[in-house]
Length: 325
Image (cartoon, helix red, strand yellow):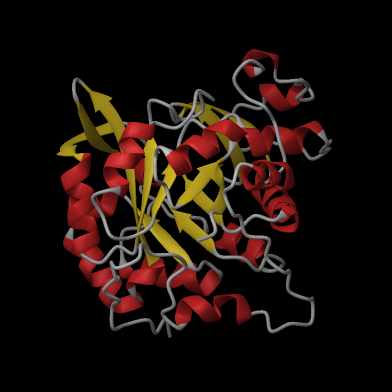
């Protein structure tokens, strides 16, 4: 079964940002510029995360999602600040295909049941931010700021039982470091749940992706640093970035990533896929839609209740809903 590679775009206000351990955010540019670059380069899906939405009690990604969806026809997952069925409906109407839920799911687990029943499990991703404390991985909320005290493994199992169609597992300890995925964490989750597991946090080199598929048993891989910094190396953006973020990095005209050069190898999606296929991991090379295609056709597989990818012998229990009105 072909591997999915999913660039992750963390959003703060109107800007794409990147941090380490989900902190120390620096502005990199406008999200739709990066999203379109990744779409045309062969990304299988995109993940948008408003990383301060839960902290500030807001959800303001609809406008960014709508602008992105105008010219991008691959599945788009959106997370951050999703608290109600109306929030999900608005994001799906704006152009999202799936939503990633963390804080609201932890606080009110029945929200996953309601969401899956209303929109279908194929639209619902449970996002788990994991931090190792002592010998245990614990689930965090509010962009890694709040310790819920819940152990990651039983929570992942419960979330899937409640209707989540995928699990996005992010290692806070590895996120932004370029030191590689937490393979043990990924494998523990992947072996415990019957739905696809998306690994996130720590990827800085192509060999990290290979290890996450092999040793980690991930079904899909999320990465940001190696893709973002590769795009920045060939991009000069004259737009001012004064809203919500540390623009010092951009003010220095970005330049080589000397501070992370030993850990991160900036690469584009074609190079990453070529590396993986040479190592024996089949990747997707999707055909792009023509401009005169039905603009809603990229939703058809999801709305038809067809899973993107599932473990053999472990069918997902789809919800009965799906009408977003």
